[in-house]
Image 1 (cartoon, rainbow, N blue to C red):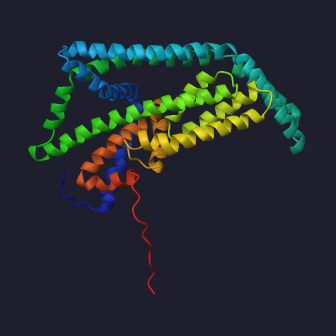
Image 2: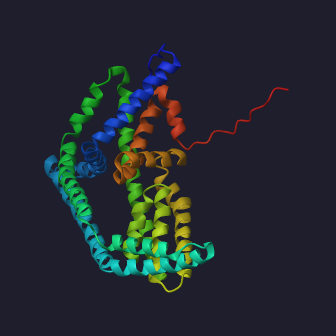
Image 3: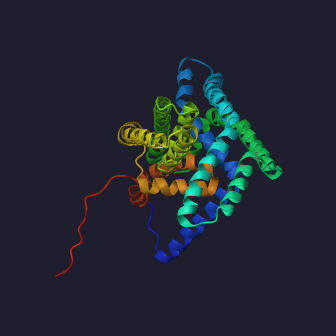
Length: 361
């Protein structure tokens, strides 16, 4: 799309841009309870759209096709949740023992450090006792916050399927609305943006699912071979954390090493876990991501990390998972708008030739 260049000076345009960006971020933060379920619903609807079309091509009524697709999705998710729930029950039953062992290990470590750095142990013991009590007991305020969070999650679980059904049903209406927003001269570019956005999101999410299955299986297998307890739930948790670029892997390996330190008699197992996780990350970064995920969305590491941090600041954990797909959509739009193409190039991972600056002699 070509737009006439504005005659406004740079500082005016920069001021308008930052004011608009600030207003947008404020709206996204304030209305997150409404926006997050909608964004999740749109992304899931885009992912399920090919399945709905498959049933429609089989001469099945569109409404019935949507219902069948959603029921299949619910069954798959229910099986996955049942697996996680059974593992989480075992983990939660052992949580007090886990806390005791971790506290003992921490106590021994801090005693050694206190002797080395000449720190009073009474202060450290008081802190350990208080921390252990906080980990095992839950006060009324925390229960209240937890109930509110659970209530919000339940409300989202009710709303998201409704949103998905409505979006899938009214998909032709929404596409036509987008077309009518622009004049005929931009119709081809609009069609290209809509088609490519849908394709990028579908292929990217499928790539993420395949990556999560492979990484989760490798994590669980590696931990099982090392004899680490709770290997399955840790493997799944590691796969979910791995969906958060760069940051998730660090959190996952820290969690794995902590469990190894607590559940095994030798501290060497923590190093073994670190080695196994590093090997899996090498496979993920050098093979799985380039072949399965990165080929779908070309976004460089700098903006991947930055957008994850911004997403977390705005929307918390959901924002961390939504940040990359949303940035991918923004990049697709930038790549098709002439005046925005430099920004699309900046978000991408195509490295230009190194330009050497020559000083005047």
